Image (cartoon, rainbow, N blue to C red; front, side, top):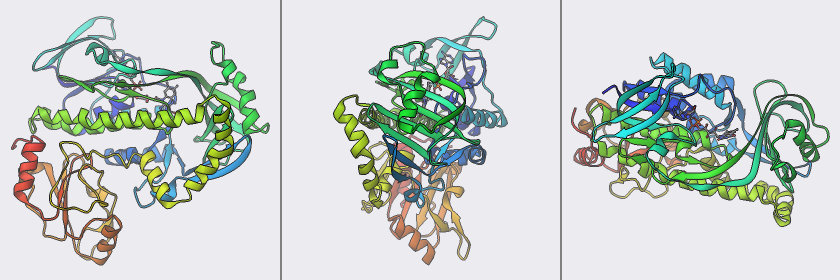
Length: 521
Ligand SMILES: Cc1cc2nc3c(=O)[nH]c(=O)nc-3n(C[C@H](O)[C@H](O)[C@H](O)COP(=O)(O)OP(=O)(O)OC[C@H]3O[C@@H](n4cnc5c(N)ncnc54)[C@H](O)[C@@H]3O)c2cc1C
């Protein structure tokens, strides 16, 4: 076998998968048909859940240094300021990163590419996948090499991280159902001054649509995203100058543009692959789902597809788990993609509908409803969990099992385990539990009982974390609605696999061998 995993595509999704496999010691080859990394910013919102993953990968400091923290949004309608929508307040207790980090896709790719090189792997550029042949125990891939020649290569598994026009998806005959929207988006990187509230996403709603101003690194640097006015929609010669009148008409005549370094228009689609796997090939990221950029979810969802698949692939490649474990990738990620398509589609239609009534709703009512709703703590919490992707759960997955009666409002099997600050040693300081979790292994968190030997079946793949009795811990556990006696077996991606009241070694062993398909080392 030439390689264990062939990763096709070195966009954000492929780079995340390559990093996660490299740090687990898996032999992988990552290729891209382009000559080098993309220069365009494209996606620019990095969500809290992605930052948590970046932290484990050792790149969060660099991302925070380069990015700008968006702690909320300001809504404007027909040139008038309407409301402030806070993002951070509700997130303070949920994650170490209670904001949207505004950091261009190019920077994200650069940081992940640098880390990958540190881990001893690098992208093979100018290399294109042109054909695939699936065999029972491997895949034969045909690659067009930088010198124009062809190479045939055998891989145990192929990960199609090759974007919306995915060759892997097409070569596997996986349908990509959906449709394009009639609206055309534009993006522009500008240096501009105007009414915008600094360090905040400014949303200008108007009768024909919306314009978003994202604060970027550097003085007066804003990324503008909007939909083209109807009269420009079917023209091929649209330039930044042609959208300035519509920008001025609702973001105010006071807008003063100094430079525009990048302008692009694009038509968006909403589509999802009917399957995320065909035998030994997987599709991830834009190859599996594309949707409107409303909510800044696209790139983040691809990164988390990769995070979900990586630990499973690593266990299977290393002979620590049976290949059936890989079935859970599709079972867990397809519902996430479908939900995302539905919500972004609803949100998108609401903010772009062309009719007169929708225009009136957008400019007269929407901002007020948002401001009122967001003054409610529960709504704020729901909104933050949804946007930040910390609320993604796999409760119906075959890998999620709850033993005995666990409280319904606390963490459940399938949920991302909550962010807790606890005393991890008797008389010790309060520490961030996330910092202690090893995401290349399983983590067994036991509360109100002695440290368990219950994870023996996982051997060196397990870390134990016994939470000592302490008043400070009681308060933190109460806040997270965690019972005073409980255990949580966390998967490497931080989601609860198995949970229950009393640690039960036999039940953990059964879970590990039957549900995860792990085989003894
Ligand atoms: C103009 C624009 C603006 C956008 N703005 C936003 C935004 O504001 N927010 C947001 O969330 N998302 C946005 N997106 C979407 C976002 O860019 C994608 O969700 C993200 O790039 C998906 O990453 P990916 O790695 O899955 O795919 P991609 O980034 O598309 O990477 C796929 C890679 O695969 C390579 N490849 C393809 N076929 C082959 C082959 N046969 N062999 C080898 N290599 C191959 C390509 O060269 C490419 O490098 C925008 C997209 C565009 C085009």
